[in-house]
Amino acid sequence: MKTIGLIGGMSWESSAQYYKIMNEEVKRRLGGLHSAQCILASVDFEQIERFQKLGQWDEAGALLATVASNLEKAGADFIIICTNTMHKVVTIIEAAISIPILHIADATAYEIKRSKLRKIGLLGTKYTMEQDFYKERVQQHQIDIVIPNETSRIEVNRIIFDELCLGETKATSKAYYLQVIDELIQQGAEGIILGCTEIGLLVNMQDIDIPVFDTTIIHAISAVEKAFS
Image 1: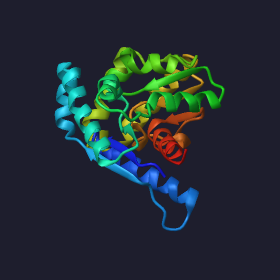
Image 2: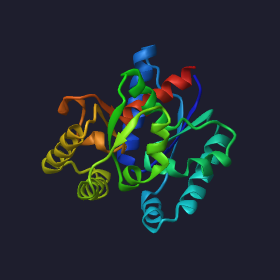
Image 3: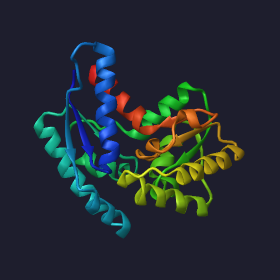
């Protein structure tokens, strides 16, 4: 089994899910007392979120590049960044290390292609929904992306940072997300990407009538697959 290097803490709520999912998947495959061979470096999200707000992406990238380099020195065979948004700086991180990064958008796109879907709704932080670093990566796989309207994007983003990243799940927020998802379906979405690693804490596949692609689950299981490859 290869050693997985995780850059976590963004937020720690979803990083805990990564750890749980990966270990459950290894146990499912191997049985017994087997668990995932991994190294977790958890950053202070307050600092990262401040960089995001100020648009200081190079500074955020440099910080995460140092973390990735430390994971490589510690023996990681490849890296996963346990957040969608910070894949905006993946090229900065890649330049600092010699081991590969398993990109969350690629892992998600492969799963969508297996489902033979072509038009997908995307929920995530405002950065993930509005900027091109994530959408274009998925679109390279011949998948069209639709996003909520501006008002909905603002509220979806607020719920992520003000509630989910703090471990709060509210019934009213879940109802709002389901309403936004219904609007995406009306725009032609054949499936929904939960494109923030915290969203799966609020809504899941059982809540929605069309295929749901939870990036946390997909990314964590893809990491285990790569560890066994």
